[in-house]
Length: 108
Image (tube, rainbow, N blue to C red; front, side, top):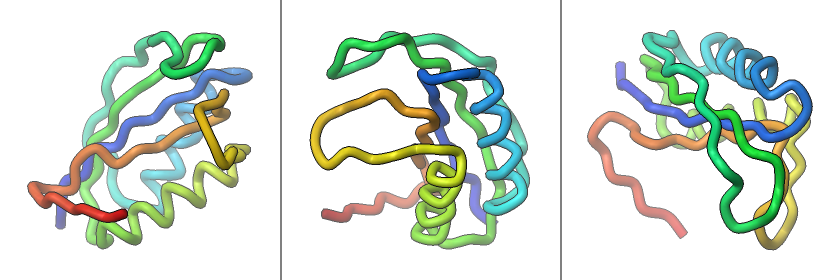
């Protein structure tokens, strides 16, 4: 079992509801959510927009880092995230894997 830290953010619609849904789905599909930060607000970065509501969760998982990424992308899609080919944009939900145990994983 590996500890994984995942950041979650939203700057559209009911931001807190979106975060809670993403946390619940992560717990169901990736692993047990051991801890959750408070929700905190940040300005958008790289584009003008409404502020983001964010949180970080600690998850205990048996999944590989690649499976965690795959499931995170599925959760984003299910919750209404659409990706643009270039630049930053508003996001219904955004999940980013911050750490996967102590591994450093480099990809293109």
